[in-house]
Length: 129
Image (tube, rainbow, N blue to C red; front, side, top):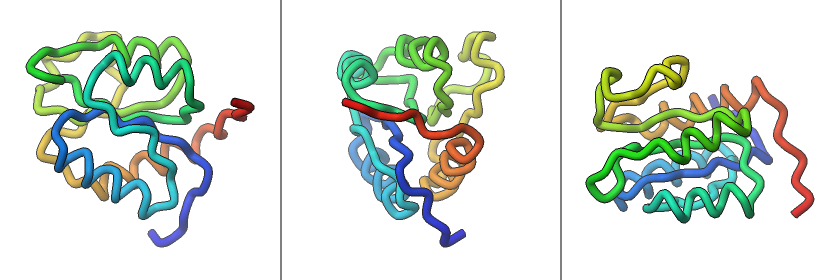
């Protein structure tokens, strides 16, 4: 797929530098705008309040602790997102049963293409900030 989807803003929450870099490059290569990447929950949550975000890619294990605060905030805002995690489905609460999980190590290009598909299904949110 060579078609670019311009305008979609994707928050990336990943604390592993090289994986964050691979995901960022894959998203940029498809014409998406990257918000982050963020290595902490607090920075990602702050960005949700300050930046316009259309979708997100979330690692669940940041600095050794599993956390669903950003996922809950995205659900509340009705924003599409995926998990990129080493945890299996049993570690993810039932409220996230419909959220796609990419198991690490995952292919950053496949992940980026999935985000493009997700953002095509929902119109980008107008941003006036």
